[in-house]
Image 1: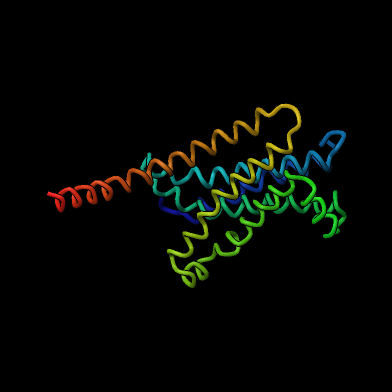
Image 2: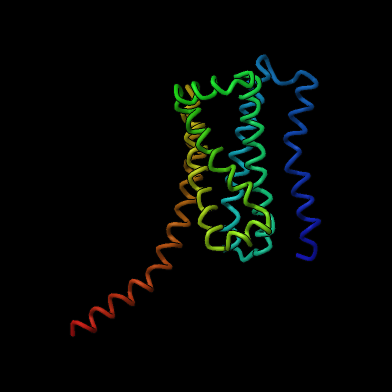
Length: 210
């Protein structure tokens, strides 16, 4: 890619389009009879979509050889956190009136809130450690280990959605299936990497027994 900075700008602008459309719909009273519920649902969905896009970049890059996709992984991951934060802010402000005690009580009482809080708790340090200076300070190994927790955040995000839905569970089940594919791919790659090492150990043991 000749100009990754321009491409990143394009991604940045387009990632803000859903929020801009949400604001326009709110301004023109097009959010339905319960605008707060609509807004919180849409921002939560956007957080999941961007989280899944982040997890999709690595397998697509490796399967296609499009290594330029790695330029956008951090940016898209930060948008997953951003929309998750907007999602939480709407809940915190409009549903709980910025009352921390109510949020804590609600988290304890309702499992889907607990799952959502868990996802945001994981995503927060990932977002805060996404600068180049912090990556250098932490070291590549520690940074990668910390950011591997994005898989847990995605799982909790899907669980949050699944527990929230009371009737048609089709959409959360689709998200769960997509997540299973993304994690399954990584598991297969991990096992294939371990296979040569395991074969070497077996051969060594057989040689020593003979």
